[in-house]
Length: 556
Ligand code: NOJ
Image (tube, rainbow, N blue to C red; front, side):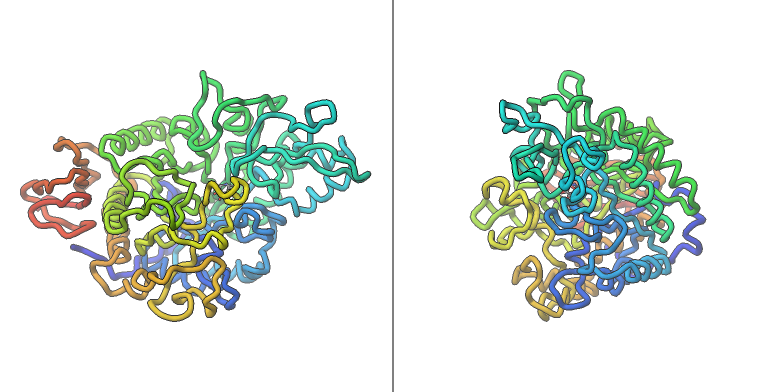
């Protein structure tokens, strides 16, 4: 097996590479759980800066920071109270600047999270809206409506929140009486902005400029497909969760409305007025052909490929989604992105430890059926080796390079995901993929912090997963990721072209440039093709490729 110990050379001048985003491997940092510098049990920006060598060593091109803005943390920071500041729990603007400078020195670009669909109910604009009367300009920044029914006691429409329950909350007016309702597609602590109001558009442009002026390389745009709602906010008696499909050719009134594209075009112009090739990445749970419309040449640069992430460990389904994704994105001239894990879904090392489909965002409790950890990790390594051989750009989620499993035995009392309470303790939610990372095999919180009291408790079995435990082990998952990234860069797989080769049922077999890839999804070993040698593999290889293994080959 080939693995890499060399740190990839930093690009001499980041700004020189116009198309970096077409092939970039982008590493997601969830700041609360990456590294804690001040011993309060919550990760922070100086903690990240101190650990950036880990990312350079891994060989990623960019990092994406989930929100670090002031926030009551009702939804892990996706409830932003101030878009142009740093939450004191995470540090200061000076800490942000230091992080950015260090990353750039290491040749790593920095993408930050933009959360434009909703803010926090603690945002000054929403507090002002609450303090004013129905019909005020302050209320028009949000979606306030009178309720239905004789006393307005019913929500204005039938929309449900992504976190369960109605998507509307009734306010108490200044005179103490029950009043209007406001829309929140997520938690009540996350009121939706009204993007029909030009003041909202102007304010977000100010936010974009604020971070662009500081030197960020782009934005990952949270639920960007929800910004514009259909006129009149009509009822929608169909599902609105997961990857959103049209019903009878009509998109749900809260998703993927035509008006979103003008917003993205305006942002693209703004970004293009800056030097250095800054990018926009769309977070939108849409099928590839709908997501591709957001990344037409004058809109965003990339969109997450959630259809790929949702695909189970099945050869035909994987091949189909790879083809479908490449076709949809090729048509608009955009790179395809690949992603297997993020802070919203069960880690793929556990997801693939179940046979059959799993509810991605539902989480697992100690009393639920548990994944097969060994099978899950084996398949996760094979899946990552498959993903990193594909042309385009790829996203990694912190800890997957350590082979971290989902934490499936979190005490329910520790859970923070709002869906746990809002679902009446039916849906456990996403905390199991957000547990603070292990850096060292020993010590309080495995090197994450000086305190053992981390914001979510870590499991006792984390030691062998720690970065330190894996660093010098050639069989470790960390070693595998480093090797895959080095070879991917060396062979320019990001700009390559995928060509399928004929293969037995259950085996994915293709070339991308000089690299030939085989993923065995059957339960039997399959022979290696003759006159090839293995450059890297997700598990030990003989003259056969074992089940649940991916190999990269070159011709002798
Ligand atoms: C998507 C984010 O990734 C998720 O964590 C968040 O809960 C929702 N958007 C709402 O902002």
